[in-house]
Length: 305
Image 1 (cartoon, rainbow, N blue to C red):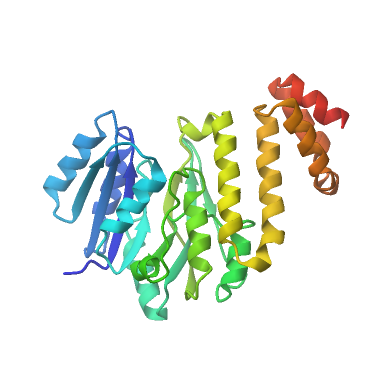
Image 2: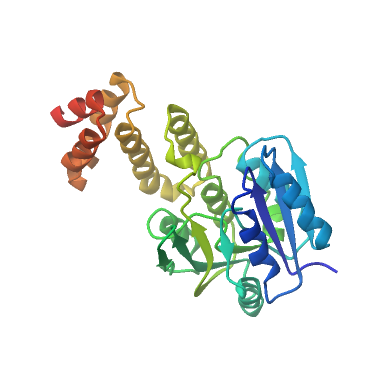
């Protein structure tokens, strides 16, 4: 029987949190689901844990592969799923028991291709509710705008009809392991999907203190630039000049704060984004942040400009 929902879970060295993630799927009030776990070349006990779950429940399938990054893992999951709808769940997060049942019911009742819901952000000692509420969920162009203003770009709080990926030729970007989910949502929404919104939170996004995203290096900056280039190719024409300058400016300021740019790149960026720095009134705030982090070379350039 075709599952109502397929859950895609990339797994990489997730032994510390993996049981919590999978158990939250097993505890779903809906029973007609499948879970595709993509072991992306883990070097800890994650592969064994995945196989143990698959041996216990026929609804769980495991794909073991050499490490190729989260975007490739998500695509492998999409290629393998059989469900009517899809949703993603990361291996260090967890979900509420009624998530699949209620999102699926909403999609079916409104004949929607995508259902957006609220979500929680969890730290070790705090939980925050993040209300999404698209400006106009019937206008996909506006929803894309919202993805860069008030909406989370993740695939984890969005139920998407599996047919949308094949019907519109949507694939996760090869080799991009930053905002690959946001870019894919943009590509989906650039087609005539019917979207709806359910104002209830189900997904718990764990702000993992050990996450690799906390260790910013030059390679992260270059990956973000590639994201911006792919975004240029993916955005509706009328949104390119609205969204891209803000995205590229954000990439620049982040790189300045973490001091991964050359002197020439900082100088060029300060000249290029002078208007935005002045307009947003953040010149001195960013400069102070740089100084507080001890990044002397970039901060002197930034404050003097």
